[in-house]
Image 1 (cartoon, rainbow, N blue to C red):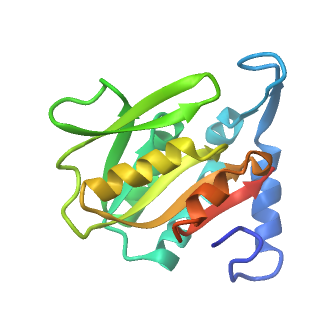
Image 2 (spheres, rainbow, N blue to C red):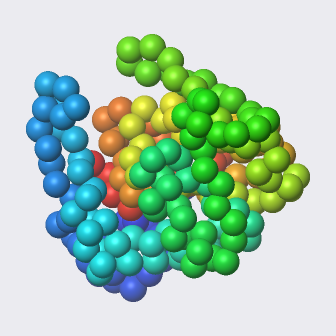
Length: 191
């Protein structure tokens, strides 16, 4: 499984990328509820140099795990990060959305939250059987949403090439849920 610390690249480049990304992520205490330290990526998205470096890192990762035929973005920040990756790769983009937000026939997956369950969906005909898919999102916490997305992609007939994430909240253990099945995970930052 890949992380920014072990991928092959010139010395210093990973540290430079990590420093650049961290310099544009703002900690917001007690959001969305008391006791939570929210990692706000809006300063990163607003900075063209940092945003470009992030997208470039995801495109490089896609080259490492390729071929990639489609990019999946998980609602909502996964849309912001995944769409430019798909554009740069010259492949289609598929949104995974909250239940009830997509028209037509869908595949649905549920996952457990700290306060209940939630469901996500993908359009049933989003993939051609055998297509290889890169899943993109901003944060890996407990892994429930990404795990449900993996299930949806596979149920729709596609294969998972890899999972590209801006950051992983290591204390919540989400990586182990994803790597147990052998999925390749890139987290550019581990906090």
